[in-house]
Image (cartoon, rainbow, N blue to C red):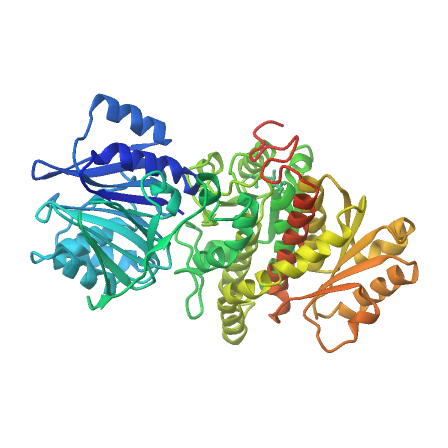
Length: 607
Ligand code: F6R
């Protein structure tokens, strides 16, 4: 997730671009850049690091112009660096472009363009697009953009300027956000409304597959074939802080609602007919065949994703998997050798315990993979094998979308191991492939239950203790549900393997304790249902999350939240969402500081 902005009008462009980027910093901030048209040339400045670094460079070297584009980056292809920062330019330095999204077929396009003599300066997927536009440019920017976009697979929101056509910005979108701000004798593009909110509240929303030509006094929208399209103007009434959260009350809620998009991005370009392509992972199939043990280390929510990962890997690749919280692993004397694969899962890539444990295992000879959301983070310096979780910046301290992205990452890794080792056949692979592709829409369906879950939260938010139960793949999800609730609402919540109930926790049950049961239709459904009955028999309140619609569940459950059917291995992705929403609505009802709960930090860089 990156942020793009553009301005054309009568004022000085750079301060407007910089103020827009500042408001989009929540979308990412590992590097930033602007480019403007000045005296018939393109001038640009870009720098690795936070926007403040670019600001101070601009103080020394001001760029004066009335048209420009800007970008704040959250790396997906190529580590944060000056070269990989946007804008990117073509070979002749006549066209400049900013992009948010992922170009899936960029390697093929890059090869084709290099064969034609184009010189690339960065490792990004984006740079291919500006060279492609250059290739098609015959004096009309929108025509070149239209031709180039038709060659792309993937997602994009772009802004493009060209020195030969200094009176226009061309923008376009496909599966990445783009809005147009309409001013008086000035117009704006941005990934999100807050970027131009200080200047205008009049907005045109752009749909997928549309191209926009912005001039100082006009905004015209076209389809990809450049046929004109009409769009009404809407007026935004949000204040700046609401606008930044996309109209949601908290970042956490916004991030929960981003999850369908996150899964789409996670899968983008990675699933082929009978293979999984993870470009940032260098291990070969031969390496993967030699592994005789996998060790997954992580903390907190990432550890829960790792627990699910154990089921995936053992099931698909038939390799024994050991999982451990990093703060324990680092003080054990684990058995690790060159045939072990250590996988560290860390959203931030900076968690001290995870980092040290990872380094220790690598020092003992293990092969290594880091699953992280932060390209360029410390953990990525320890290994040449990564799986980036492409969730975009997560601002809410409680992890939500990055957890779902971690589950998908480990699922993909398990499939990859299974294919390399011949433990998963083509037919099974195809089934999982198809099931994965359905997940984004199914997640959107689960999110439609938000109002029902909010009502459940209103009923039970005063309870002081909650239990969460699940078996098999749903056990880590129960743990995650309990963790979410306790960290943002400060309610005591315990997650248990459902079968452990009668070994102690059942003593806690009374009519004031809600038990939330993760109950998908799988091979352990009946067993978990008997645990629900045990809770009911002791007057406990029961809240169930299930996809089993043909049972009279009302008999056993006070509240039932239905999720769509999927392959049972993928059910954790769907059953997690109601738990996130339940925790969120309970915490909000209790007036907690949802995005910054007390005593917690987003990144735990000390032991
Ligand atoms: C809980 C949460 C934490 C993190 C943990 C590990 O919502 O966010 O439990 O999962 O601190 O952080 P990373 O993944 O950055 O290593």
